[in-house]
Every structure is written in C-alpha cells, then in structure tokens.
Length: 317
Ligand SMILES: NC(=O)c1ccc[n+]([C@@H]2O[C@H](COP(=O)([O-])OP(=O)(O)OC[C@H]3O[C@@H](n4cnc5c(N)ncnc54)[C@H](O)[C@@H]3O)[C@@H](O)[C@H]2O)c1
Image (cartoon, rainbow, N blue to C red; front, side, top):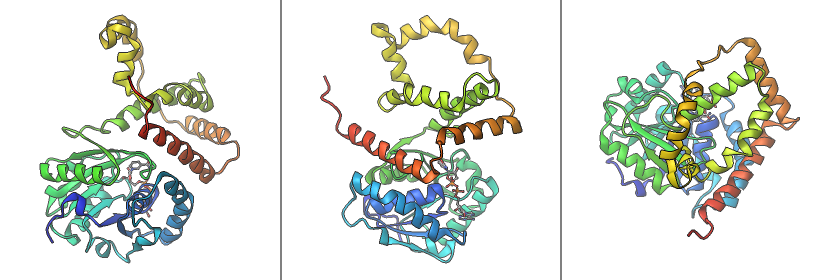
C-alpha cells in the first residue's frame, strides 16, 4: 500500500486509549473517520465508553463531519492487528522512553510500509524514540493538547532520521481533519506550548510551597485574567499590545531592567511530600466535591463556547 494523500485518509490506528489516545479516537470519529484501536488494559473498552458518553454530546454540539459515528471504532486484539490495515497511526502509550522505543518499533514492523506514524509524546524527542524502527523516516511527533477532541493545537516535529515529507504530510493531515498544527523547525525540549506551561507550573509550585498563594488563588488569577486574553493573543502579541504605540520595543526597554531579577531568581522547587500534598489538597478543595467527570463536562462546555466565538469573530476593523 502506498501513502495516501492526507485528504484521502479513511482509517486511523490508535495505540493506547487512555486520556489522550481515547481523546484522539473521539476526534477522528467526529471527523467521520474509521478508527482501529488497541490498548492492553483489560477495561479499555469500558473506559472508552465512559469517555465517549461524557464527550460525544459535546462533539455533537460542536458539529460532526458527515458520516461521523461512535460505532466506527473497533478494538483490535493486538497492536499488530490494529495497525495492519490503516492509513496513519497515532501512538499514545505511556510517556516512558524505553516503552516508546519498543512500541514504535512494533508499530513500524506491523504497519503498511509507507504510512506515517505519529506519536503524541509530550516531551520525548523523536530522535530518541525512532532508534529501533526499520523505517524511521516516517515517524513524526504530533503532540496534542488535552482534550484532543476540542483543543485545536498539535505541535509537529520530526527527529534526526525523519524525512521532511513525512512532517509535511502530518501537517496536511491534521489540517484536513480539523486540527491547527504548528510545525517546529527543530526538536526543542518540551516543544513550544508545554515548555511555556512548565515554566508556569514551576512558579505555581513555588508559590504554593512558600505559602504565597493557594491553588484556588492561582487558578482564579489565571482564568479570570490572562487566560481569557490568551485565547486571542499569545504572549508575544500580548506584550506588543501592552506597549501602546511603542509596542514590544517599548515594553522591553521599559521593563527589562526591573524584570532581570524575576526572570532569573528561581530554580525548580524540590517536590517534597509536603508540597505534593499541599498542591493535591488545593485541587481537591477547589473541586468542592465535584467529580473529575463532572468537571471535564463543564470544561468541555466552556471550551465549545469559546471555540464557537473564535470561529465567528466580531467584526474586525
Ligand atoms: N495527559 C495529557 O495531558 C497529555 C497531553 C499531550 C500528550 N500526552 C502524551 O500522550 C501519551 C499518553 O498519555 P495519557 O495521558 O493518555 O496516559 P494514560 O495513562 O491516560 O494512557 C496511556 C494508555 O496506554 C496504555 N498502554 C500501556 N502500555 C501500552 C503499550 N505497550 N501499548 C499501547 N498502549 C499501552 C495504557 O493501558 C493506557 O490506557 C503520553 O506520551 C503523554 O506524554 C499526554
């Protein structure tokens, strides 16, 4: 079988159907594709059904592609069976380098020789994961954001042995099927968005550790503040607009001297058992008795509303 054009793809192989793999499966089903899935967990079908019961009504509200149906997923008995007859594979196994190396090598050995193999890794380099593949040229990172069925971004990057055409194919594939890919020029630890999130997470842990703020205060500060703006302007444009007529140049010239200290003073905090407990307790307190599934449904409902607004922006000058 030769590689299909991205817009001719009809069947996707999903390896690992946890939070992210299950989310990808829902996304591709909503896009009107067939999905063949594999997960070694004995309850994988039931777990996927629960995810589907929560999320499918939300996807219906957002709008399904013609032919989309939850019945178009089939669970295979083995990884090899799941990838034997598909047009592309999205791998979502646990984030452990050796396991990723072995899983990608197994997928590579069993999948049609020309199809592109995508990995959802959130931080590992494809250069390190593709080492046991016979055809590493077709292995590409396609890093989604949770939940993959709603958040449009996928960060796309190859490894040292990846062919540039495979990266371009992945970008085209994701674009055709409802995602907003950002292609990286080279491998960067944490890619772009995760790296930025990690910096914020580090500062959150510092503040909780030092008793400077609670989880609730930190979450409120972001969701009622910069979080709202970030749906429209990223950190670059945000500061550019904050500089008035002088834009980013004015912001940098004005604030850089006083920001040198906050930019450089902090190392990563030690994740002690006490800090771990404080952060977890803070999340539980903020949940106020709501279950994770209830909160996921609420989150998804808000995300849908935001996506609808972004699809139909107000009249721009
Ligand atoms: N959770 C996130 O927010 C997030 C975001 C982006 C990317 N990712 C990446 O997605 C991948 C999966 O993460 P997750 O959060 O879905 O984890 P998860 O624990 O929810 O799911 C992992 C699934 O893989 C299955 N599995 C275990 N061994 C396997 C194997 N050998 N072959 C196939 N499946 C196997 C498990 O049974 C489980 O269902 C990781 O690489 C992670 O870095 C996660």
